[in-house]
Image (tube, rainbow, N blue to C red; front, side, top):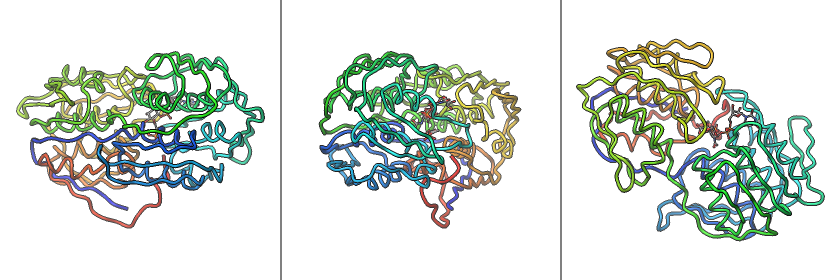
Length: 434
Ligand SMILES: CC(=O)N[C@H]1[C@@H](OP(=O)(O)OP(=O)(O)OC[C@H]2O[C@@H](n3ccc(=O)[nH]c3=O)[C@H](O)[C@@H]2O)O[C@H](CO)[C@@H](O)[C@@H]1O
Ligand SMILES: C=C(OP(=O)(O)O)C(=O)O
């Protein structure tokens, strides 16, 4: 199991290219199941999660070929023939988003058996909304021995579905299935995250008929088959926001490229309020902070898009650990997403957590210590803290980080960070506990 060591060594200066979005790439990969033609995804991040989902797709008989192309890293999917529609527990347990193959398999072949994903450290994360929505589309679903067995004896049939609350995964899952359903599907209270827009636009490129993209009501007119094609994955706003927090924490000037400023507006607004300079550019932002000036504490509450992303909450909490004053952070999406707080406390942060609320009182200095990554975004929040902590911070269990951050040491190292990976024995899959 690898670990990462960081020595706090002052401001960052340089440029970081933002990779393709993990949370878009893995849904686009699932969309490859929907067509018997080739789908080429460009601007693909190479991450533990994409590698792992690639292996699951191969198990269904889908050819997956990674290469370098005109738009950087790319992967070609060929789902001409689906030879298996079974996703075993061992493969789904290691990555929750693997569950999202259920709808596409069902829509394409009429049957699928996929393991329930189970809980993870950030919350229980049930899939009841996914199952209810697929049932509304005419799927016959049985739950037995931890598996969801689904059939669509007459094919999927369009329906009007109003989600009881906003779910990113359930919106994407139902959207994919509905593209091949007979008739019209209306999804109300749909999530509007940019990754859903990316998925919907790729599906339209493949021949799907979707209206209302980027709104909370999606109208899908089912078609009998989808085509292949080529699609470039949108930039990863969570990776971009994480590096913005890193630059703000360490001070200095970092240019984030290959992205779009508006993808992180909710975060930028809070960072500006705290005293960070964020300058939009043609392909991203410049993040600037005079290391001699202390940031001000500001409050945040996580919300569905376009609100403040839960996936940036841990990183922002780290930023607040050395700000002047007390910041109140509400986590409204996941019931247990403050696992990084006790780890940050090991570095000297003053944080108290009660239910869904954390109070962070800024300290003058953090001090290096051994800490443990508990989930993906928690792990990067510890790296960010390590950039300013006096002495050495060693972060264990970085297999969590490898799920979603491509070449992190290289990207931060190029801006002057003193960061290195210490190799340990390999971990099978993206890791067990998420
Ligand atoms: C791979 C991926 O894209 N993951 C993202 C996705 O996760 P994911 O799609 O799992 O998140 P959801 O939006 O579905 O979850 C939101 C809330 O709804 C609950 N819920 C969800 C589905 C359901 O059937 N029943 C239910 O109760 C969840 O437990 C959670 O409390 O959106 C989250 C919220 O922006 C992000 O943090 C994750 O990074
Ligand atoms: C929680 C995340 O991912 P997943 O939904 O795959 O666990 C994340 O990307 O921060």
